[in-house]
Image 1 (cartoon, rainbow, N blue to C red):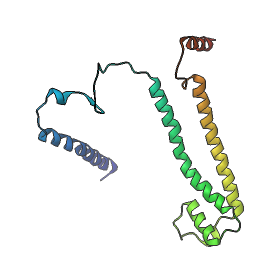
Image 2: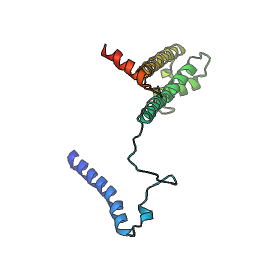
Image 3: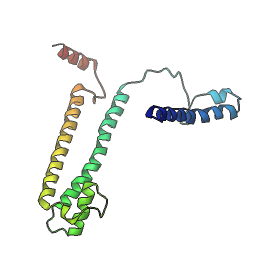
Image 4: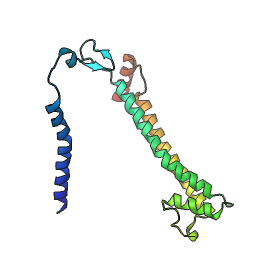
Length: 174
């Protein structure tokens, strides 16, 4: 069977896995709709007014900015692991067994598979640590440029005055 056949079987299984519980639920559930069951329920509070209310977009902007800058922190964990191992390897008085273990961890090897001759020397580890620090500096530099851009655009200003917006619009036209 070729790749297209496998993909077709996978797609059919995915559709079946999604449709089966929905169909089964529709067949089994009771069908006694009451006004209380049809009412909108949100966090234990009863709905007041219409659901068609204008919502300020600043909430979305702040949430998106938080997500963007918060996700960037996830990129620091692998960097910290590599940088910590490289800094530990810079110690020339480190035992050979520990040096071998750190080299294996740094290279992503299974423990006990690397020969003793393949361990990183203290000088090589120092160059790796400097390269890691420079990479982090570039990473933070890009983040700071993005932060300065959104600050300059005024996306972080919670209260925007009409006069301030008119000045910005006039400056953009020049």
